[in-house]
Image (cartoon, rainbow, N blue to C red):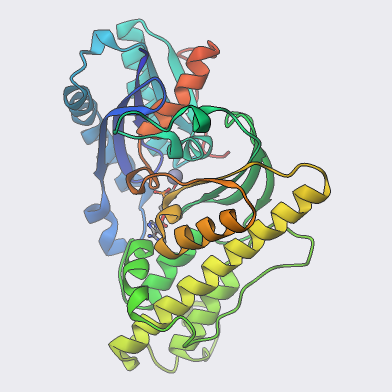
Length: 358
Ligand code: KG4
Ligand code: ZN
């Protein structure tokens, strides 16, 4: 059995986890900084890196304790070293280097986006995903989070080919901004998802941006602006000086739920339509994938999960969705993907950099 400790500090969650053989989660600790950033309605990088620094060592200790593993029993240390907020990444990378050096075990730097596409394999139940699922297969992968909306083809998740991306806002970011417009607070994605079932998804007609016919790229800023204008009316003046006719207090609680439902439906339908288009493009080129793999915070969205399952059924594809707890940022996905590197003996030196971009 191979035991890897994973560390994740790319944004506003300090996380550590011990995973056995890439799939069996022995411990999974995530300390959210939600309360520190809530009043700013978004993540403040300087506050995030300071909080990581205070929390990282107790979180690593808790992960070992929960797993019932002594540090000397670990086979490797994995850390998400890209992409993310640079000050936050440096905290995790420094802690991982110190552990790797002092325990004299390999250090493995992991790409956070690739790790999201490994998350579906993780479970704390045994047996894990099963042999059929464990085999690598040609896949269409979609990472949907606060920072990414990207489509990939891959067989090996450590070698992704990007075929589409957002040209403006990431879908999670659009959900978060929509929640602010609706007065629901931060982080908005889960709040929108919880409220939507109480509303009528056809009450408001919001746009689905498809870009031109051949494009596999996404755009969510038009949808967000359409919601803003629906709620506040058209702006008088420009930029920061603009004033609006009204705000969300002019809407009843039923109308707010209708807006949340309409926004969720429009964004999910855009994603589903783009996946359909990508499958058609790939089939035309004789590259039809066998598997649809999702990852990232927005893959926790209830409507999206339902629509993805329907799409996979229609197209006779295997669908791989992470368990809810492994959709959002976590360290188990970092430790899990690191197992592939461990088997291939792809190790990093103590010179491993933290890199803000993909
Ligand atoms: O993967 P993640 O934890 O962090 C990034 O790598 O960005 O994703 C966080 C994002 C946030 O924007 C959050 O609002 C969104 O995922 N999110 C959701 C849901 N749960 C989290 N969006 C829609 N529906 C949800 N249920
Ligand atoms: Zn993420």
